[in-house]
Image (cartoon, rainbow, N blue to C red; front, side, top):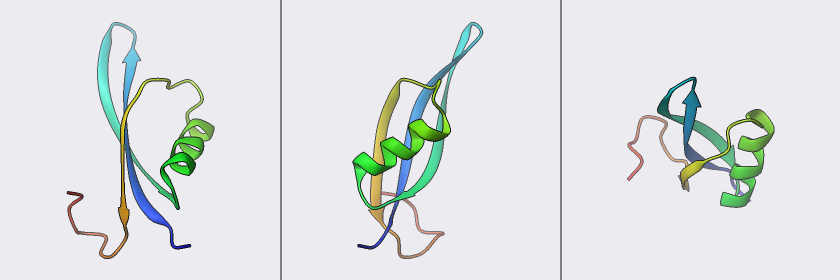
Length: 63
């Protein structure tokens, strides 16, 4: 199964202000993307959204 490029947006609370951070993760499914994300950032909890798509060109915008 081909890997998809998943964009995981999460809200991080830093001291008193919140910021949204997006991380690109290669995974073959949404669940995998979330698992990998949690392994990298165990302390970042609130994932806002994950968008996955087939990877064709690295410079293409994610719809």
